[in-house]
Amino acid sequence: MTTPQEQNFMRKISAEEKIEPKDWMPDAYRKNLIRQISQHAHSEVIGMQPEGNWLTRAPSLRRKAILLSKIQDEAGHGLYLYSACETLGISRSEMIEQLQSGAAKYSSIFNYPTLTWADVGAIGWLVDGAAIVNQVSLQRTSYGPYSRGMIRICKEESFHQRQGYEAMLALAKGSEGQKAMAQDALDRFYWPALMMFGPHDSESAHSQKSMEWKIKRETNDDLRQKFVDQTVQQIEVLGLEHPDKNIKWNEERGHYDSSDLNWDEFWSVINGNGHCNRQRVEHHIAAHDEGEWVRDAITAYNEKKRAKKAQHAA
Amino acid sequence: MTTITEKLELFEVFVRSKRGLDHKHVGSLHAEDHEQALEYARDCYTRRSEGVSIWVVKSSDICASQEDDADCFYDPSDDKPYRHATYYVLPDPVNNM
Image (cartoon, rainbow over all chains, first blue to last red; front, side, top):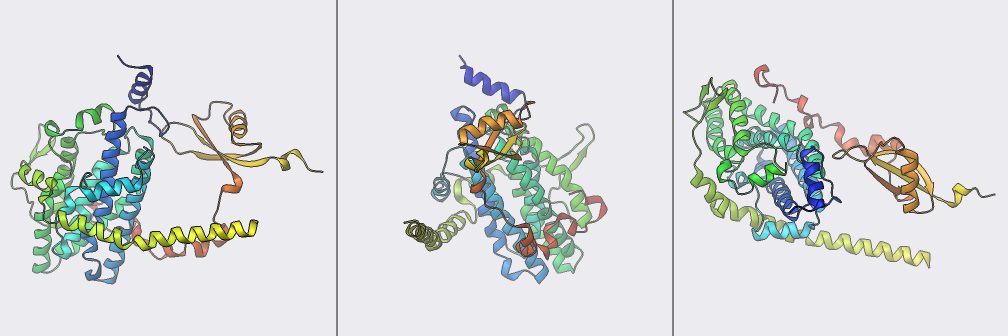
């Protein structure tokens, strides 16, 4: 039996109305959203690490300024998403605790190392490119604050992909060595980028309910297909070789056919055994601990100001 | 002589016209307290069902940047054209990314 509250909730969902923070919502909807939005926020924040790795070694001042700007955006995007998640009744410190204990996940892509400068280009182009495909779809998610966050993020994100592609283009049109570096980065990041869309729909634990509640608007496999299709020509224009030797246009489907992914690798990285899983979380914990004195100073300053005000008033 | 509006507080009114959209500033009004401000706002700003949700905020609680200071306030962004997507010139076939 459904209660009037549940009926009203489902009526809004089917009428494409957004759910807002003070509306009644099923516990499982709230939990599902907290899981997805916090995971998204953590990804933005952890995602700063692989790129930050090249900040001091960017090949020119221009590239360095661009990369710095991009990383700054990622921090901002993490903030938008943490704030959206807080409207569901979870605190920032709870979320950070879950990230650091491993209870909450972040996108597995950030557990791959950035070995060369070309990896920074490949991340902007492929990783941000894949994220954009996902986020464009999420602009229509049923939870109002998440949807508005996605709209803001998509607006800012387009430069991320373009700067990455531009950096790849410079390498691909450069010396033999530079071109080889670009090809190597493409070969390493192409497959993990496809894995960003998550497991096959049939294997995805949260997908069905999320689709029903319109938290997710398109399935993992459909979004992945979109990305596969849009990337083929981008690789051609770079003059690089496609990492998937089975990529082939399928006239009947109107899509490219492609190889299946290495799902053993996917699950292994999710379960903590990627190249950088431990390093990423350890670094986050260290940075958080080292920032403790800043948070303490803010609190102390505020108390001092309050005391001064009280003294004046007296 | 003190007028009635001087004895009342000034509130800023924000209306969400449709679920999913941001609350947007529509104007201000005088009221005794938050509850009264909400009712006045409903009567004044949503007579034709312009909204599904109203926020009222004491005007004195709003801290605003000054437009006269805009030059120096926003100065740090002016020399960073690379934050815009249009800064990057890409070949035509892939320029829609």
